[in-house]
Image 1 (spheres, rainbow, N blue to C red):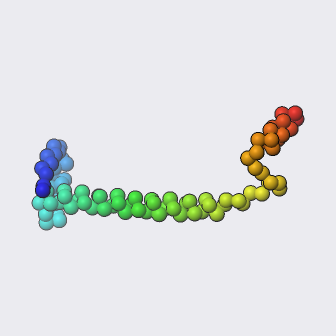
Image 2: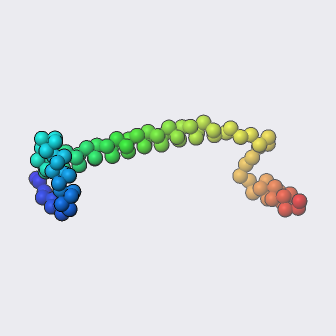
Image 3: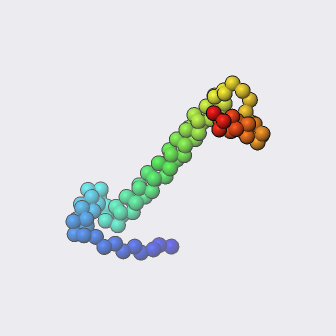
Length: 91
């Protein structure tokens, strides 16, 4: 199934597209379709690259996990947190 797409272009843009199509030995329609497919492919490649870059950044970040040692055990118990806050507020 095919669809019809109508574009309204300025004379300058149309002339440039026609020139590019003629250089490629294609009709304007064929050239436009080819160009859109190339753009789609480039965007897909960028997305894959970006995903690969994201994964690489996550791995670099995870290497730092546990790299800081405060010199004492830490936890999430409220009594320890309250004691630390009380000590800091007293100073």
